[in-house]
Length: 244
Image (cartoon, rainbow, N blue to C red; front, side, top):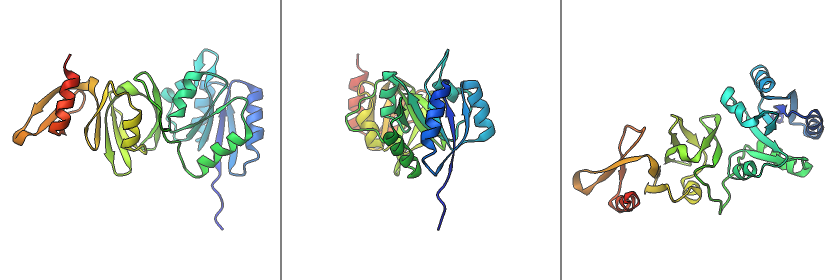
């Protein structure tokens, strides 16, 4: 019989009692092995580099800083479950992201569901009916690393089998397990448009549309060298959007 994978787990929270309570709850799960705790971003960076955890429970609010800052300061190759006491803006963002989140005080049943998702290697999908704004940040796994990406920084999304490839203005490029239909449903229609059945672009990065041979069209995007082929049908829609 194969043993279940144990997840080396790090708890990051500035409140000692909150860390203790979560550690106690996690002790009920045989697959979770808490290997360390951190009380701020500095000690979290040190713990991640030393312990190389598989799973991180990360608080959002710290004195003078936020949990978001951790992603800019260290490479995280772990699943992350966010823990928050309030912050409605964060909760809304996490509702549409690949990670999970827990509200304080942590509900044992909700924690069990989060752990189950980790064990089954299932990420939360974008729920139907959710609409993103350009100011939203989404938490995505790209090429086995995790990033916070602002919606308005996404230049292009292309279908790639059961995945999609994303290119951002900051030079990030990689595959994520979100499907194109999910993106098409939740991205803001004011700036994102389908130019092909397998491609969505951000209109804010369009430089121009050019006509090629045989009535073909292609679009030139900022920060992307290769032109993107589009059909005549989509070309007319884009021209309408580009017309003041």
